[in-house]
Image (spheres, rainbow over the protein chains, first blue to last red):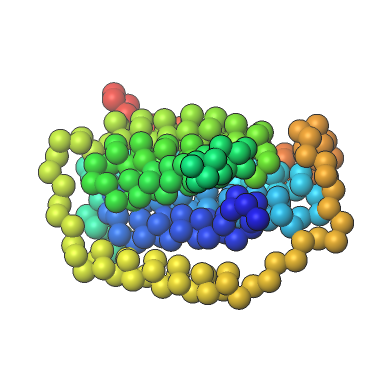
Length: 105
Length: 177
């Protein structure tokens, strides 16, 4: 059994990628760094879908289509998030989440 | 000698290339979350996404791999570069890291990792009884325009709205505000 022909390899890899992204979301303070970590998490989900699609699914087109939808939604999310980051920087002169706390009571 | 001979079979070479791709993915992800310079983070993300595209090749889908490079590396990473250039200058001193926060994040992510790894180890995956061998892109396009046409249209609407929203939100630069 080859290592790249096993479902578990891909699932563990996606798990590590997800955990790294989660660490980034929790630990980083720059908004852009948080966005980068979110992209890693989305990619982990994509790998999971593609792996299940390759090894388990009844029809191989479905997982690929879902992965394409994930990419499209991630692109929309990145565009919106980046424009918000630029607007926040212009307003508050910082993109550090510990300093940009206007809403705190 | 036998060891080297094992590597020179097609399977052996494919395995070596697979480990290279996996290493690329994990190294890129590590750079993306751990490096201090935000620009290095983006480059790490691009490296990691190239690795993920390689994984998609191993998962039998060259089309999605190409789309991954095109959309993620080609569009999202470049957009993030633009956002970096339009926001905080890189030469400003960055506040020092707080060890407690890093520790908490490692603990949180580690807990999730351990829990999901346990779950993964316990689960038995059973393939579908009847699996179609049809991997062609033509079928993919056919599905997109018949069975999944509603989602396809909604996603295109979402992209349009997101584009307009991004323009409206990021407006008001030099001169206008």
